[in-house]
Image 1 (cartoon, helix red, strand yellow):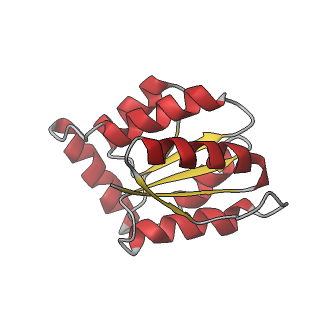
Image 2: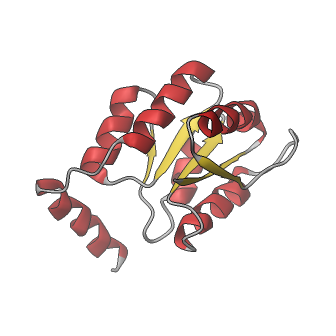
Length: 146
């Protein structure tokens, strides 16, 4: 499975940690930057990660900033993206099962590396349960289309 990952400076260390450890889990990782820890604007990197999904380069995205909120807001501006800011493993489970989320956002200043890795693994390994949730996701898509 191909996963895209991007961060700003506040999420850079967590991005590098997740990238290394998710590769060990067998995921193919595309890093949308930044390449080094430097002050950058999170909207630029959120857009790069999201466009990876929209261009079908990757299946899922992981976006990391200080709180995960900024990345989440930007990602959800794009039609076809359902980003979920997750702080617990249960958040990740439900984001996938109920919302068919395709982007995970994380707060690099809020959660530890090991928990972030467990959240990411749960998000990536959990399937959308469809059923009644399909009706709700379809309503989201209808709202996106105006």
